[in-house]
Length: 112
Length: 115
Image (tube, rainbow over all chains, first blue to last red; front, top):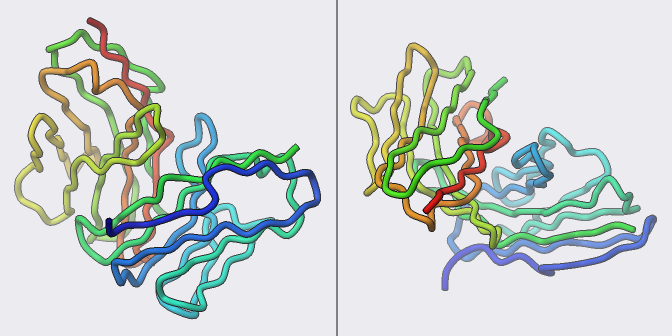
């Protein structure tokens, strides 16, 4: 099925470890986004991309890096994980317009 | 900057009754879109309804309707004939091309439908 695929779905990290979350979309969308969801705070934008080779900071970018080397993939990296990065991470992609946003199923990350 | 405010952390509604979830927004962009998403306990984000800032009529999708009051900057979601399966978290969100098409979310409202 067409859509946004996130890997992994669950992960437990120790403080200081690094990891990369992968987001892949097969809808030829230009825009891609990484959000984190914490209780009582909705979804907050970490980084986003408006096209292949571009990235930009969102609302809460500190501690994260991203890359978009291919149009269909958007990678989110944590270089040195901290307990404050325990969250559910969502990737999304969009074209422009009213029906454009498609979300992945989320990655639940716990940093201990 | 863009901002979405949802002032109801939680709501209860009796099955088969209607419920309104509040959403106010702030933006300086004259062209924007307003969205509502449902997030059940399973965690996925489900798109419900969209309203464009230039749309003349309020959006409707089945049992969902959006009460769009542009002058008051409000975009309330109305769910008619509530069902037990409507129990979920509901998010209001906004996007505009001037801000890189980013979707900005409110904090959400938890809706519980009672039988």
